[in-house]
Amino acid sequence: MVSPKYTPGLVHTPVTPFGAGDAIDWKTYGKLLDFHLAHGAEALALPMHVGESVSLTGQEQMKLLDFALERARGKVIAHVSDAGTGIAAQRAAHAGKAGAAAIVITTPYYWTPPADMLLAHFDEIGAATGVPFFLWYAPEEMRGPKITPDLVLKLIAKRPNFAGVVDSSNDWQFQINVLSSAQRVRPDFQLACGTAYMGSAGANGATSQFSALAGVAPVLVRRLYDICRKEDYFEARKVQEQVAALYQIVKGGGFAGLKAAMRAVGRDCGIPRPPMEPLDAARGERYAAELARFDALGAEPKGW
Image 1 (cartoon, rainbow, N blue to C red):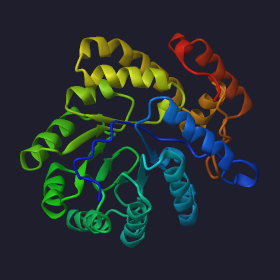
Image 2 (image 1 turned 90 degrees about the horizontal axis):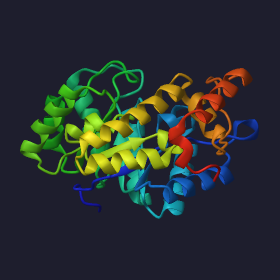
Image 3 (image 1 turned 135 degrees about the vertical axis):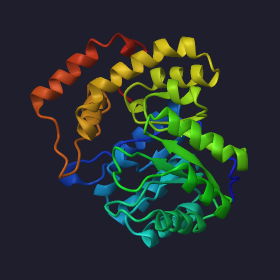
């Protein structure tokens, strides 16, 4: 059993490459995982939403996890979310037995359960495995039930392997309130940044970061993370502005935009699965042109 004190560090969240017939491109996926591990990733979280998890079958999700665990020698955090509690709990149990370092869960897809049922949902999933688990709070993506400091405290009382919250809200009040409340009863409780804004999250106590942009600019992301861990936030601001500018370029295209940006730097992972649409040729060319003008990418690796 992995200790609930597990601190993820800098976590890369890989995309899922697709090839002919929208099938998973396993050869490219292997190259992608190797790339992340060679360029600053302390762990890989997958398949996250940026990895198009909701477009994958349950069997595909397990195969991706097993493939990554073998490739990354256990440095994997398994995303196990689902609309059904039992389904997510089964994924959590599989991930723990397969050797995942931790699991991450978000609120149920589509449903909006009341607070007591949301607590029961997380409790059952966490009970399905002995490895540390994290709640991922992404209110803009997962509209409906909210993760609150009160829910966090109740879950801490129930589950000794509840290790922390990954926050994508960029809400400094939530970050401070949830971390200070949780650490009063569980001093090892972790706050992780789930967005590109490690500067502000780090100042509020985040010790880890989950990054999708690391697929495009791993050197820049690593530099920001390292400066924030040293708590040199004056220096971090300059780098944070560069990361934020890159995020603004990429975010408008969603998953397709991220894949287009990766293609522009020589790491082609195909296009999204339907119903997500790829960028048209003209927009893809604009992405490539914007990235070519982005000076901060000069120190980044090109290709694999």
